[in-house]
Length: 86
Length: 349
Image (cartoon, rainbow over all chains, first blue to last red; front, side, top):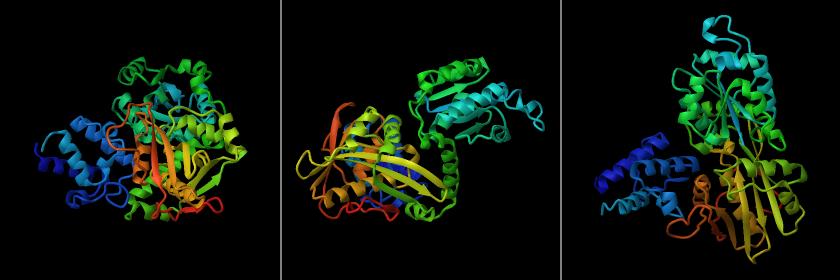
């Protein structure tokens, strides 16, 4: 997998959680929580669980501040670094 | 602590097999009906998992006159039905008991879900006296738990059909969050929340009731309760927090913050955190600091804190069981207090 493929996978995952297609095309800077994609804490937790299953990366353990949830781009960058996609 | 009991229907809750004669289904077993009513009265949710058509569940609800918190009727494995119930009610396996007259079904559930307490119907009477089934004090919120889950299902069905945003839906429902200083009569519910909440609980263990009682009379602490209601029903007290106001100059320290999962998705935790920041600032504090013991289950609370602008430090999280402090500097702009927060203590927001 390359970085573009990862971004597409993440956006697909987000679309599944929000139940609409906005995450597929929203700008990289779109926040995941609140006014961005509107994920609440429950959906945010589901996202972390899906990521852990799919990529074996436990964001809750690796990122105390959960900065990886700041935006679509932040999440993709975080996973991309952990997966050494460069 | 067992929070939900899942019933099989045929020859367990019902005195016979539903599909033998669906036009004249069997009556409810007397012994089962008695235990169901008794456990429901203690605040334990009742649910159904049955290999039957959905009508069988509806019939059992009518015949017992009970508001079941979840009903799973179908032809899949019982363990899958119980997993669906756990997900619907936001429960962990160790919080669930299951009773079925069929030893094969009990074995299947015991194998797939080893943490679920599996009981034969004849063992229920004795099990009802075990401490797992015996909360110390039964609050009004606990007694009405089945009814509240039914209201929740109705609310969720409307939410599905509703086109607008979550906030629009909360307004449409007439959501009302009331924030108040806790009083003497709230003590049992405070203790119960501290014992029953995990996903939105900043402490890893329950606080005894006397600990809350001491804080109520302390001039250096606030104990705050949140009530939630909308046009579907009144949920009573769904959240609370404890604030130490004068330990560190300029800072409000929060050693305990908790919310019931029942209030999930209804803006309550956001309202509490927004109020906390505003009230702290109104009292002259420069910082709000929530102490959070990291557990495998309170990640949702961490997301809510992050989402409200609280920060705990860069890098990886320390191991489970560690205490971290989520801080919010109280410069403007502060998190917005949603318009459905209709009341808060005078002068605090």
